[in-house]
Amino acid sequence: MAKLFLTLAGLFGALGVALGAFGVHALKAQLDNRALAIFETATRYQLIHAVAIALVALLALQQGTDEISTPLAISGWSYCLGIALFSGSLYGLALSGIKILGAIAPLGGTAFIVGWIALAISPWR
Image (cartoon, helix red, strand yellow):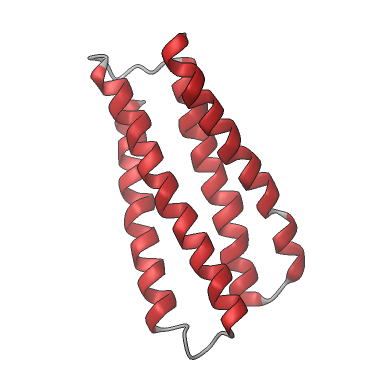
């Protein structure tokens, strides 16, 4: 599972950089300042948590196995879920203006918090 998380981290990171560049270059003329700020927030959180997923993978690989402890697994999957819900809903909100998508972001934020708490617990298990 550690290898899967490292792969996901790389993919989320690459996608985050690509979306960030897309936002700066292609969307700047299309979106208002508020929508651009929302898009940038989505990109920032995606990139931060891509690095966090890589950290989870590297911590697991440091143990000399592809197996992963339960807290690290919870942490990694929570970060993935957070990216999908938080960043995904903000990308959708920024691009479509559908305000109800903003209501999904707190679920993703909660997933991020769960991930960080699980990471904090992981060395004690």
